[in-house]
Image (cartoon, helix red, strand yellow):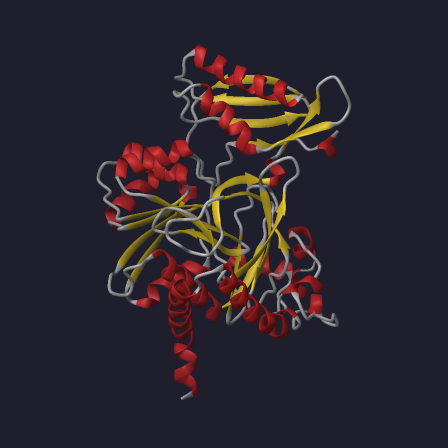
Length: 431
């Protein structure tokens, strides 16, 4: 009997998480319902998971506010103290590189587009917990309807491998590091009805392939810009939905109306206002985690919340836009004086795209305290390039910032890792 339970425990976790998520989608009707559910789960999680992690041992923990806010640098410096498996940072990286994790666990890593990769360690049962939640949110026809899922991302993890054990789902991972052009014939041959990929990859498929006929499309791993959404939805004539997920866990998914809702049935969010903007930055506590404590973890993402209620009626808070990352906020010199002015990625992005409707792609980087580099496709007319530069100059002048803009034109191929159209490459501490 014990052996039977051990063999089938992961699938039982999948079924339990799936049914719970579907039930909560019907029974959580108000913010009070959401907060009551979170309070119940968080109390047990603090006692059973967080208090057992060496980093928190000896602390008096009765509520989330009793915990310090941590970030990636704190977690990675003492990785073994945040997970009950005792996996050190060095052991974690060896497991990722060799593909041989500790028995009973899975170890994964982020793509590390900022040069600072993160690790996570979970049990096999937790993999199926995650799977049950995401399937319940993304595939409304499951289990009556099967799904063939093409996952096109720059990094595979053991999370995804759990999908194929359900019998009703077929998932194939396509390694984006090989290049989207190389992968396309293989994706077509797989005949997926569901594709999960970065928006720039979905856009490339939309522009270069006419044979794919997916029923569902999900954007993941990058900021979804309107220029990409419009092209993808026009080609496939279906709504492009989003999955907001990171090393920190599943954070949000789109509903049938296309609104991105925070996954507050599994994660608690503290949303810190970003100065001089209408944006917020999340501090997350994933109360489904059992092996690694992800408690009051400060992310560097920038979100804009949706002001009006979604037509789906969900009480889960809605996100109008995942804007980018806080470390991509440009820090520019104040014109004619001391000090600096922060400029968020969305403001810069909108200035460029609104300058001329013929601009369908670009890259903008801050390369110095007063220098920006703008790259545009080489087939654009000179007047379009001038319009983009003028729009940026006017924006910065109106904000009281000072910067020189150097524009170049060249091919902009699809990325093999996460695309950041707006990127701050310069840091104040470097000068």
